[in-house]
Structure formats: structure tokens, C-alpha cells
Length: 512
Ligand code: MCA
Ligand code: AMP
Image 1 (cartoon, protein in one colour):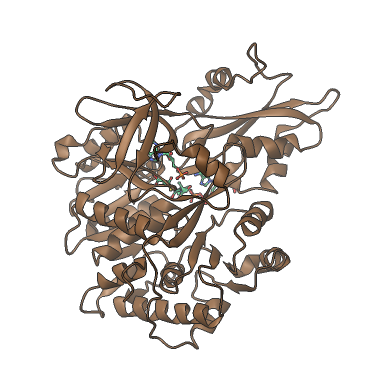
Image 2 (spheres, protein in one colour; image 1 turned 45 degrees about the vertical axis):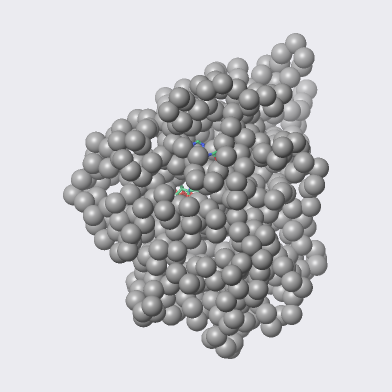
């Protein structure tokens, strides 16, 4: 076994009895039960298929598919074969996908068969050698080809600092950056979380998050696999269905929107949560009100943690004692993680003062794919990564995130970069300029809003702008409201005052 390969570490944690159930699907037409042996054999066959393609070492394998257990196996097989996994949100459209393929130059692209026409055209044009399909009903050319492969495979040797995945996070200038995560980054974080969150034999995880972002792909999956825990696998989050399965589970991980939606269900009771050990929230701020309501309705105290694509998890509220979990905070830096708060000139701030959060640790990425200058900018001279989050550390050591210096909206756990949306809006006929902001939203935490200024003489229609945007970009990025205005508020320097726009539209969704 290759020690540095993350797959080897996950595989070593499989139970001795490979015939036990590793994953059980919850929302397929009929429930499917995958044993540990199925994971072992399935990943071996896909890894053999990849190896048979004789790709250059560390080839990127870009994947835009619907959630399925086979998609999980594909992720594990890419690690196993020593290549680099590149997950892509399945809501992305052609212009978004074109950027990622051009930037990452994947040797292999795997997509849903409904997108094969446009994805393969783009991919072949940009130099990709192989395009396979994979659907969430166990069909597609990837599995067809993998079925012909041997079901044994020796994990490819990898050092712990070798690249395991590239996770794209949108950039403040609108250009997405690929965060390069190594086998060692991912394993170090997974091992720390296994200890910190008190995983015990017999734990069962409800997995209801997408698997194209860090939360669902790394935090949840590595946690369950390292603990040899069974996963109850939801292709998509549906609050009633998840609540119905809580009595069989012990661990749940979600973004705040998932908790808000479950709280809206009468079925969410203490009785439904009686077997649960731990509810974890992250990816976006959990409102104190949600934290308190959850305590009251379920009898459980949500454990909130904080992380980033570039760093995986950074802080966590304590597992024990439960009374140490403080709503509104993200807890303490994880063991091995350094976290400090500095001012704009990189000078340390005293306890309790608000400033930019900087971090370092074995989980912190090595840099952005093919962007050495951007990477250099984001690290301090002494090697700490600037998160772009603004926060404070109190006297007891609790970290609180109070805002972001990066112009970013987090909607339902998905990041939306205003600069990117403004770029698309500004290209539209009749648009002079635009400003995109996030304002409080009862379901998504923040809702995206755009204010658009027409060119002189142009008549703009908000609905038509929304429709045009939805024709080009992932729908979750499209503003939930667009306002047409004669001008944008600016300060004396000519900079758009987004704060004023935020104040103006503060109550927009609350009122709705
Ligand atoms: C879906 N829609 C959204 C969102 N999701 N709009 C705004 N924000 C969203 N998050 C829109 C769709 O575009 C669609 O619009 C309509 O809502 C219905 O889509 P559907 O797919 O049915 O939505 P849903 O199933 O209700 O999805 C909501 C969701 C989902 C379950 C909350 O957004 C979700 O799974 N979020 C979790 C994201 C996540 O895993 N984040 C972790 C990032 P239309 O009708 O116009 O087409 S990792 C991270 O942040 C760091 C590292 C960390 O710390 O974890
Ligand atoms: P991503 O680029 O998707 O990795 O998103 C990372 C960002 O999500 C962080 O930089 C934070 O701004 C935000 N985030 C993650 N967890 C939390 C949390 N518990 N509270 C507040 N913000 C969070």
C-alpha cells in the first residue's frame, strides 16, 4: 500500500468484514445497498480503467455529474489511480465549464449523459482526450468500460505532498482559482476531525450534501470512511425524507439552510432525533435563532465549525462538553491549525479585536493552480494564508466570524462572487453598469440582489435580464431580485457604496 496516497489511508480503515453495508441509498427508486467490498471492487475497476488510458501522471479528472454512489467511487478511484480529482457543480453551464476545462486542462472529463453533447464538444476542442458519461442510475460509458476491468488494483504510490484534488473557488475579480489540495492536506484534516468529533464504532452518517464541494466531498465522506461508518445516502436534500431517516442515524452534517428547512417540518421532534449523537453545521454563518430553535425542538446543540476550500476545516466548537458549544461562534482552531487575527498592515491585533483571519497548518493548500502571483498575494511573508474572513478571538479562545473582506455572497452554502455576476450583467445590451450584493434571506441566509443601471435611452426589464442570466450561468447565482436604477451610489473616490445598497434592500426578503 502507498502510505502517502489518501485512498490507502481510507481503505485501511474499511472494516475487516467487507460484506457489511457501507452505503445505503435513501432516494433511489428502490434502496440500493453497497458493501465495503463493492466500494473496494468498484474503485479498483474504475482505477484500472483510468490507468489503462495511459494518462500522464497527476492528470486532472474533471467531473460534473449528479450525485450517486458511483460518483463517490469515481472520486475514490481517481485518488487510487494517483490522478487529481476536479469536482464541478452540476448547475454550471457551458461558459462556466469552458473556463474550468481551459484552465485545468483535464485529460479526462466525466459528465452526465444529458450534457454529453456540449461538454464533449468543449472538452475535445480544449484538448481533453477522453470524455465519459456517468448517470445517477448506474448507467453511462464510464461504468460500461469499467465493468470490463479487473477488480483488483494496487493504489498508485503518492507522496503526501502530491496533488490529490483541485477545488475551484470563485475569485474576487471574477476569475475562479483552483485551490490545490494534496493527499496530506486532506488526510491530516480528516484524522483531526475524526478525533475532535468523537466518531465511535457504529456511527451512521446521513449524507445529504452535494459531493462537488469540500463539505460533502471531503468532510462528510472522509469522516464516515475513516470511521468505517455506514452512510445513508441522499441524492438530493429533502427535509421530510431526511427527518424520517434520523432515527437510524447518529451524525448529520449540513449547511444552515438544511437546518432552517428541517425546522419548518412538524416531524422534527426530540423523538425523531433520539438516536442522534451529533449535528454539525458549516459553510455559512448559522444564525443564533436557528441554533436556539434547533436546541429547543430537537434537544441537540448544533456544533458549528468553519473552513474553506483552500484549507478544509480550520476551527470547530468543542464536541465535549456540549455546553462548550457556543452559538454564533465557530469554536477553537483545530489541533495543528494556527489561527491569528491581524490588521490591514499584517500587524497582530490584541485579543477581542476584529481583523483579518490568517491561518496555517498541515491542512492548508499549497497554492492556486497556475496562479503563482495570486498565491503569493494570499500568503503573508511568514507563510500564513489570508482567509479573507474578518473575525475575532475572545479571551477564552473562541473564534467568531464577523464578516468578510472579500466581496462574496454565500447563498444556501454556495458562494456567489458579485464581480462574476456583474461581469455577465454588464455585457448585456442596454446595461451601463451593475452592482451585485447579498442581503438577509430567511431560507438561503443571504439572497443575491442586483442593481442595474441602463445606458442612456435603453429600457431594461428585470425579468428579461434574469432570464438572460439563467441562460448563461448556474441558476443559484442568478439574483433573486433585480432593480433598475438611474445610478449607483458612489463615494467621493467614485467607488460604488455597496453598504448603502445593502442597507436599502436589507428587508427585501424578510418582508416577502
Ligand atoms: C438552489 N437554488 C439556489 C440554491 N440552491 N438559489 C440560491 N442559493 C442556493 N444555494 C435555486 C436553483 O438554482 C433553482 O432555481 C431553485 O433554487 C431550485 O433548485 P433545487 O436544486 O431544487 O434546490 P434545492 O434542492 O432546494 O437546493 C437547496 C440546497 C442546495 C439543498 C440548500 O443549495 C444545497 O445543497 N446547498 C449546499 C451547498 C454546499 O454543500 N455547500 C458547501 C460548500 P431555478 O428554479 O431558477 O432553476 S463547501 C464550503 O463552503 C466550505 C469549505 C465549508 O466550510 O464547508
Ligand atoms: P468556499 O470558498 O466555498 O470554500 O467557502 C469558504 C467560506 O465560507 C469561508 O471563507 C467563510 O467565509 C465561509 N464559511 C465557512 N464556514 C463558515 C461558518 N461556520 N461561519 C461563517 N462563515 C463560514
